[in-house]
Image (cartoon, one colour):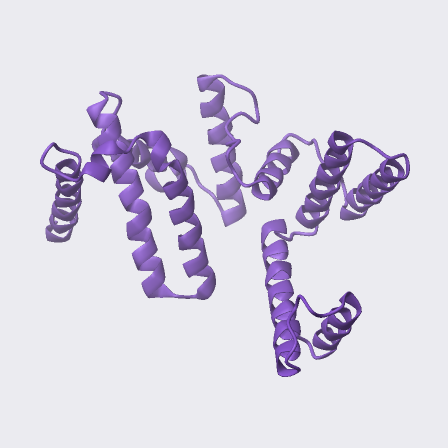
Length: 265
């Protein structure tokens, strides 16, 4: 009970700090903010938290959790001022949702595996969404990064049987989309059409990754990191020869790229 009281006191004190920052005696910048103006900070803090997790940096995770919590508290304070909801509504809402979505812990439902828990969670989620109305995919935010949204859209559709049976089938679709892009290029396709074909290729590639049990976001992140390492290798190698990137030919940079690849960079 003492621990719960300490946690409660700390949270109430945080809310009070935010209330004061938004008051007439507070900070002009904080008073000026709206839900819309905070949007980029919410996204930025979420990504910084993910980055700290990826680095295996516990202290960084702690700090970034605080920064993300700040955005939640900030939004709740603005909503409270506008008579929409407050921080208590936020906390109580997620508390009740956790209890509702875990009947095997807080009720008498019996489950035998984490997979069964996941299936039951999704059933409850679908049931709640049915009560709220809206389309089957409407709860997936349009503001998500496109690669992440593609995975979630495909996962959601797969739950009702709209899916390829095998990764090989999805790979055939990927090859088909690449061929369509090739044909559009040969025909001098307009920008909008080429953009659509590129999007189809990426979406199909996400499907292949998902059916192989791989995360497309992680795969692309690792490829991005590999590109960074190899390009940095080119930059260093050129610097050792007193050359800049701008003064080097594509052929020279390509040779160094292959050298980096051969060295496992």
